[in-house]
Every structure is written in structure tokens, then in C-alpha cells.
Length: 335
Image (cartoon, rainbow, N blue to C red; front, side, top):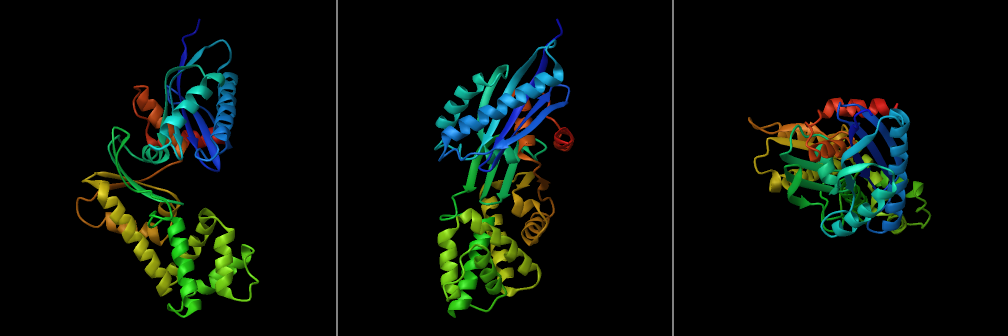
């Protein structure tokens, strides 16, 4: 009988989508599949159903590829799950321990659940020790040791923190527009943009543009309002003083968040759309991190499933895959 094919499985479970990947010990990416996401905190049943279906499908894809003659075994499975921090970790672990055996995956090693920031770090870091600065819908910084969270700053949600995140930038821009309309703040091009944003969101028509914005915040979730961050950064690049001030405050806030946990880290991973896409926030953070001599090496995070696969390889005791090579292999497998 042929020797078993050794593999690891990486999984990224987000609120809107999920991705599963399978990596062989020779570096071949055997399968990458996408599926629906689920909110772990509000819909644990949906997480179990969606994750179970996705892992079942990825197991079938690998069997189709390697055939039935050669057996295969999963040395480790790592799932990065949004909302699986300390408050929800026990539920997340129990959920996965119950779901994995029913998927057909031949898991012989550990099945581990980690938080999505740890996955984001692993998706960009050259090694197991360093720091992460993430700014997307939310914002958080981590100090990481041995691919495990050692310290955290922010990540407190839009009401208490997430300074410099997309939602934070958007809300600051909408507040600036409201202040302009109310006579409490300086004029800004954001005001007209906010009116258009409210109209596009079905919140216009009250007869008072200030009340249109109030209606907008009633109708839309913070994550949906976060789309206005693009207007804030665009007008900052165009020279609007108010928008530029918001961006500068956001950059300073992100750098403060990172400074709490960086602790001399020689490698910093940037993750999240606010920091990995071109724009004034990314430029400001890069300029600050690259300023002093002897500053940290800065890396952009790849797709989260790359981080999950690298963590799984690490947990299996394999050599750590190169980020760039694994990212390219994942994208090639998608094509």
C-alpha cells in the first residue's frame, strides 16, 4: 500500500465568508474552497453547519485529487474564527470538536481554534515572534510569541475603541459633517459627501440634512457605516483640512495602539483593508514605522487562509512555509 499523504488543514471563518485550504507536506496546495461565513457570537449553529459543509467539501476535493488508492492523513487543523477570544473560546472549541469528526477529514493530530488576529499575524510574519497592527472594520494590535497572543491593545469595538479603523474613520467623518451642518464645526467637503451617502442608504427626505444623518445611523449598522471611510481618506488625499485631520488622528491612534504592545518587536505585520490598501492611513503608518534607524521590518498580511495553513504546519512540526510561496500556491489553486 502507498504511504499516507501527510497534510494540514487551515480554515478562516469570518462574518461574511469562510475559506478552507489543504496543504501537503511537499508544499503542494491540494484544495482551496470558499463558503459562507457566520457570526460565531450570534449564530453558533450557523457556524457549525457552514464549517461542517465546507470541510466536508474540501475533504471530497482532496479525495478526488489524490484518488482512493493512496490514503491521506491530516497532521493538524487550525481554524481562525472571528469572535473566538477568551469570552467565546470554550464554545468555539466545543463546536469544532463536535463538527470535525463528521466531515470525513482524516484528522490524526490536533484540531485547534485561534482568533482571527493571530491568523492575520501568521499570514504575514516571517517567524513566530513579532507584532501585528490590524485596521479593517475594527482595529487591534498584538504582541505575538510562538504564534500565540502574548499581549493585546484595543480591539474593543466601535463604542469603546477600534481607533483608526474603518468604522472609526467613517464615524469621525459623519460627525464632522453633522457639526458643519449644525454650525458647530468648520466647513468640509465631507458634508456634501455625507448627504450623498445618506441618500444612497435610503435615509434622505426628512427635510433637514442633519436629521437625514440621524436616520442613516438608525438604519445602518456600524459596519455598514464604515463604507464612508473611503470618502474620508479620499478627501484627505484631496487636501480637505477636516478629513486630513481625521486621518492624522487615526494614524496617531493606531501607532499608539501598536506602541502599547510592540515592545521592541523586530517584525510588524500590517493587516486589514485600511492598512494593506493604498491610502493616507497606510502611508502615515509606514512613514512612522520606517522613520527611526533600526525600526521594525514591516510585512503585509496575505489572505487569512495562508495564515491558518502556516499555523497548522507549525502545529504539525513541519518547517514553516514561506508566506510568498504559499500565498502564490493558494491563489494558483483557486484559479
